[in-house]
Length: 194
Image (cartoon, rainbow, N blue to C red; front, side, top):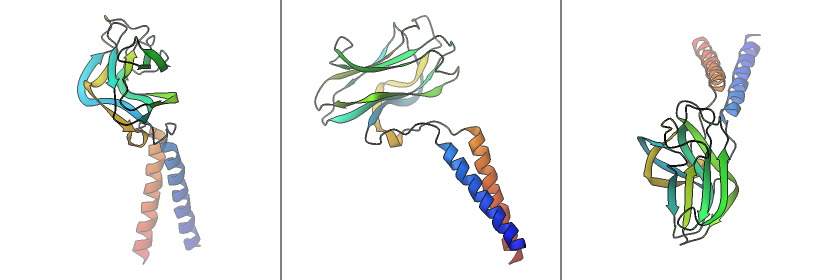
């Protein structure tokens, strides 16, 4: 009877952990062979607006698949949007290849991870000029609450599997912790009886 009880508790704890681990993956999976642009890590807070777009020039020695960008951003107004665009050339006067707009309300008042993952992954040619621009259609230069965090002069092209896809949901973490606690109790009782 006791053996069955312990086995049942152990199995239920394992099941709880499995369910919680399944819930930890909150973001959709991205192709690992695609790279995304991220800004250098720092405490810089740089405004983003129609008047102050942020841009990066891409020209690599080898061809690569480009999927968009991942940034830490914030706004205090629910009416503002953001657009990440990719152009062929050295400015936004070049040919627009693709873009992704984040709708108003996509950002939280505090800094949060925002993914601009293009549905149409772009194969960028070697030794060719490309221009990536992050801007807004609604925020103006007078708005100091709409910002991107990170050094704008430096950036990295990072594979999808190296990008932090977001923090796990608190509920999933709580369930996972309770499952681990249950496993610990069962193991301690078994050790005490042996």
